[in-house]
Amino acid sequence: MFKKILIANRGEIACRIIWTCKELGIKTVAVHSEADRDALHVRYADEAICIGPPPSIHSYLHIPAIIAAAEITDVDAIHPGYGFLSENAHFAEVCSDCNIKFIGPNPAVIRKMGDKAEAKRTMKEAGVPVTPGSEGLLEDEEIAVAEAARIGYPVLIKATAGGGGRGMRVARNEGELRTAYNTARAEAETAFKNSGVYLEKYIERPRHIEIQVLADEHGNVIHLGERECSIQRRHQKLIEESPSPAVSKELREEMGRIAVKACQEVGYSSAGTIEFLLDEGDKFYFMEMNTRIQVEHPVTELVTISDLIGAQIRVAAGEPVGRTQDEIFFFGHAIECRINAEDPQTFTPSPGRITTFNLPTGPGVRIDTAAYAGYFVPPYYDSLIAKLVVHHRTRERAIMRMRRALEATVIEGIKTTIPLHLKIMDDPDYQSGNFSTRFMDRYMK
Image (cartoon, rainbow, N blue to C red; front, side, top):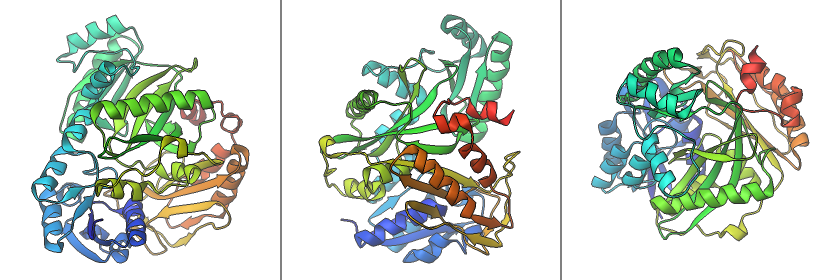
């Protein structure tokens, strides 16, 4: 097992990794920007090193500074968390070259599955169902128009290196496609330094279902069920839950089997997520693979009694998964609300100092956060400040518990999305489980 791990991240996920490392008896090193000098992950880690000014390009994305910090503190491994460098194949290669274990899959797998067009092609060859779309990247606007005519409108244009809904546009006719093609490319170039885009058939009212997988370096692969991620705005998830109210035991087994097959096909090792679109006829299509831990991993941990961060670390250290598929059981229902420092009506970021920060307690309530009273939410990073997660025997009771927990959460000094989450908990369609990824389009109107 590793003796010391550097955490190349910030916020709640950095704290989450530190908690597991403490339980495993592993020392931790926190890196931080100048803006995060007073952050909780800096306080909780055994060592801390400042790696640059506030902009992430000069700190959390600055590979030389992170590697220098790792070498100075003599760590065995680096955990990238999610976002930032977590799916950067070059970073994983640099870690390997410096004899530092990257806690994640090998660089070749990251590169193959991180390129969405390449990932889709790989999955199609492996017999995994994929949405109809273009063969590879679109070289110019006229090719995009021709491919859209072949596929049939509406279509979804997607950045091959995309994430978080950036570089993604829906087009319902040729005029919209021409505009979307150029907009998506420009947005992708700005966000990811990669302007490559491709087309997919746009499924009108799908559900966003993802399967959590766990694989080791010995060829063992298991899945830990699904997460329902359809409550999202502009492809940014707001609420996640497990299990999905739309997935039967039989469908779960089939989707899980396909997800395991996909991992075996690419030689995957680590925790990861296979994301699918599920249509109204219960047909599912591969969308993408995330070769990292997900923001919403706590709901899976609660219903399967797992520690996915711990599993990631053990697998990276060469240990086997330690559980067979027959040993995975699902208990009750878990829901996660992402509490963001945003205006709940306009979703405008709301950085600033938190003056009051009181969190709920009681049975079945979990909070993952790096915020506290007096903490200044910086404007440079993602607006997520806390993940409120609840667990109960049934979905109905979990919703009631979430409402109670949200009402007991008091965060003042900044605006948060708590009022929005409370309204969604009271929405009849949400309560009945009758929703799709279009839920927020209807809800916001």
